[in-house]
Length: 576
Image 1: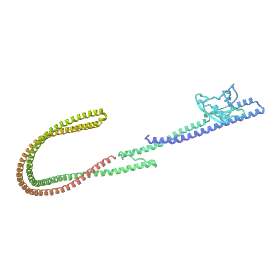
Image 2 (image 1 turned 135 degrees about the vertical axis):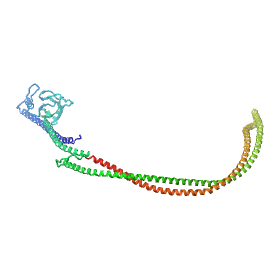
Image 3 (image 1 turned 90 degrees about the vertical axis):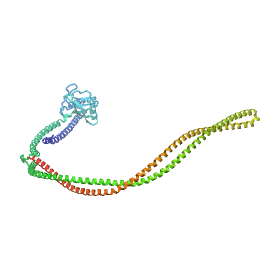
Image 4 (image 1 turned 120 degrees about the vertical axis):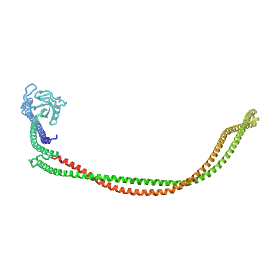
């Protein structure tokens, strides 16, 4: 829904339909409710009239003018009509509340006293399709002073179609009859349906008229808007030569058309002025660009030459600084070497003294090692003798152990004999017990001594083995000491040679240190001159760089100006 005309038409439909439909629905609802109330009131009043007729007939029965049967028959005729068959009657009652309206009557048990087609039958168990016993509801309403009952019931013309039906019932106190007046609700509000049909027709007619009017006025408006749109579209495409929009009204659209015409005129003037300015700007920017290119080329040549000079001076200064550094380093090495030479001389003296002292100590160590070997041999002999003596002690211990065992056996025999002697042998038994105890203690002591001797013998054997190993080491050490003596002799000769060479080197180092000062002074002069030249060339180079940057900035600005002029010229060329 992009079209404004379509939106206006839809808006017109909404404006017309919404209030019209709302008014029609309200009118239909009010009319339907009012007609329903009128119909209900008619049913109720008609029932009251018939109750008054029954009351009058009953009064005549009490006066003896007519019998009860005659009065009831007259009442049936008044309620519905004359009897046309055994259980049927014609509907002759002049009261009409719709095409399907009629009165009927039944007693408290639902027996039909008056009915058009089933008079005399019982209606007490009549039900609707949804299971309601509407006759029982009518009886209950009548007993409570009268009331309405609504229910769905098949229509006379189409039994398959159900329609809402309303019935008013009230009981006669004289005969016990219940007078009922019933009809379909559609008989009440048929007039409301006509109101609804008229409202729908008027709504359709008003909608058509409104849409036609809206369409007519919106078409004129849209044609004018399209004319304005066409002009603004030409302006957006750069076409300013299109004819002006005619002013046909003084409303908002007329003001809009006038503003568009004024905008087009202003754009034509602005485009003409801009076209002239862009042409002049293009010529000026081209001239400025050519001048800046020539200036830039000259500045590049000067900058290149100065850069070469500056680079040479910088390299010379750097090489001079490197030479100064190397000479200083060499000077430091010479000074350090001289200092280290003195240190080496002093250390060589100490080495000589240590070597002489070491030779003496090695000689002493060789003598001590020889003596140690002799002592180890004697110690090994003593350990062998100790081992032999330990074996003799083992034999003595074994003899003592044998004696203690025999003593223990004798003490046991003595105890047995003392026991046989009875009282005379008690003292001897005590002595035998002590002897036996002493024998056992001796046996235990010899066992401990045997274990101790075993451990001593094992330790002696181990010591003997280690003595053998120590003796071997002593011999090896003696051989090593002899080699050390030989090495010390060779070291003494080498130290003497080194001392002679160091004396010669000392003279060379002093001469080199004297020549170093002259070289350092000459290199310092070269470095000073190179540094001044480099500083001067850097200042010149910096000035040229600043000039080149300024020229480059001007050149860039001229290029940007030329580009902007081209863009402006292209933009202006779009407008015709």
